[in-house]
Figure 1 (cartoon, rainbow, N blue to C red):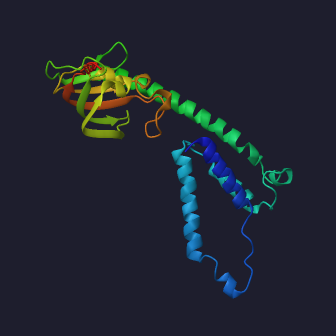
Figure 2: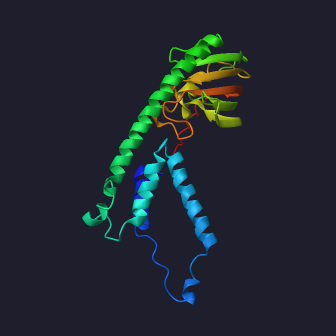
Length: 253
C-alpha cells in the first residue's frame, strides 16, 4: 500500500474514533439491534490486529507503545468537531493534520537506516564468505562458489534462456524465493543473475552472493529489504542460446 493511501486511511480512522461511541439510548427493542458484547470484543481485537499489521508491514520498527496508547485515548476522548478545524486539533498533543508529514519523515529515516545497515552487513558477509569458502569473485562484485562447473555449453548472450532450480536466501538464512524447473531469458532478471549464470555450463551448480547494487538496490521489496545482499543456490539445468528470427521474405505483388 502506498504511504499516502495508508496515512489517508489512518487519518480517517483517527477522526472516526475521535467521534467516540454515542451513549446507548432507546427502548430495549432498539438497543437489541446493537452488536453483542462478543461482536464488540471480536471487532476490537481485529482492529488491534489491523493496526499491528500496519506497523509491522510498513517498517515502523519499535514504537513507543505508551504514546501510541495515549494517542488513541486522546482520540477517543476528543469532543466532536469539524475534521481538523482549530478547535478540534487543539485537543491533541500534536496537530493530527501534520500526520502525513511527520510519519513520512519518520519512515524515511527508518528506511535510510535499514538500507545502510543492510549494506554494511552485506559487504561484511561477502568478504567473510569469500575467505571462509575460498570462493571466487567477479570484477563487478559478485562472490561465487562453484560446486559443479557443468558442461562446455555456456550462456553467452544476455538474450540466452536458462532453465534452473534455485533457492534465494538473505544473509540471515531467511528464504525469500524458490523455484524448480523455471526458464527465463537472462535479460529479464537482476543484473547479478544475468552475469552469474554465465559462470558455469549446462548441468552446473553454484552459489551466488550478489551485492544489492546488482540486485534490487534501495528498492528491495519488503520481504527482502533495501540494499540487501542476496544468496542464490542454483542448478543450471539447460541453456538455450538465443536465435534471431529470420526475416520473412518480401512477397512479390
